[in-house]
Length: 489
Image 1: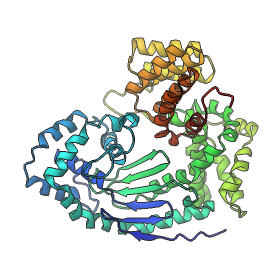
Image 2: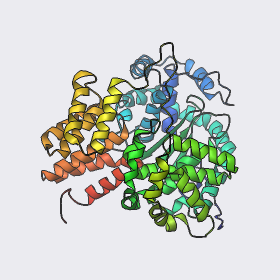
Image 3: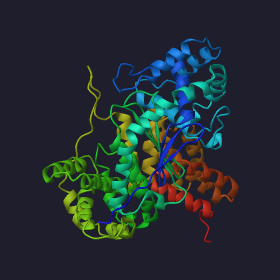
Image 4: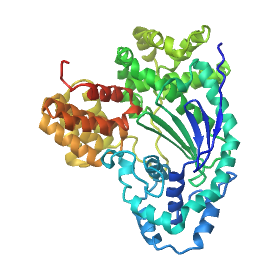
């Protein structure tokens, strides 16, 4: 096998440190520090007793307690009003999203138009004026400088293992992430968030992984996101070849544990199956252990993991890189063989949270939404719209899935005015990034058909921020930016 030697160099920018290899960066982030410092000042303290080897949040709280800042009551009220109850990851994750989309202090300017922000960050836009006050009143520039050495120590503790993991991934697929110009994969290590959390984001062409304090480096999560960084562009490039195998999507709809994004975006699903198979191959799992994992992944809905596990066995016997053999590997999926194999698969049921009075496995709303999605998949748009409208009228008037489903159905029924109204309503309430991305894309297409090219381009640009997570959506954005939808040129 061809070995790839990973060269690394230390960078020391004025506001922090970075460990960089190719297009992969490992560093602390000042904007994230400032936002989480404000969160800490307002009383944020989940997981305070967790033993992670870092108590920077406690030290920061002690430093903040020495001052009585005028802005603190406003900060506490803001954080209280925007708390995501019952979802610690979602509660912190919205602030991670905001931090990744603002520039450095003291201005904290948004790096994209505020109207294009993803929903969770857009909902927190009102924090920026308070953050500016907090930054000045607390003299955060001094605190940031004070705690940089702690961040650097954590980077030093993790960097070698992370570099080795990335080098092995590059070597396995025989091309480095740096082969894609203009793209970066940035790992931010933060010592102020809830312990053991990991937050992955893709904005535009840039991939981010934010890792909170942990006992050990989150190598599995870091590698998994990096493999997406390597392989997602191939899924976009060869999406037409992948979608020739999309008749298998019918099986995915019957998998209760499979996330909706995988059911709706087949190239994304294929990439996830390839990555899961590659992880098993790279870890050199014993045969029985690997077969058990493959069975569990298949039962969970990742039904092409067995195919890719076998295909990668043959890939390892030759010397071409994955970007050379990828298309043939996709074309090698035998629909007849896979259909026959999948007919015997029993999917694992959806896990239901335990409680004193367990909820039914599927509520009436969920049942109708799934029914509507299945009708869309079958091309029965009139029936689908009726089902989604039933949800909106009787159960959940602000359901993003129902609004989006009604919009898609109306669009396919050639009712542009109704479709446009539903898509706009969807964007008012949606937080699912796939739904947000496609709502902007559909609106762009409707505006193109009306001859409103500049307005259409604005919609495609808004979609471009989050569409990179979904290969089919990204191809639609690229096509829309290049020429008007419906144009023959």
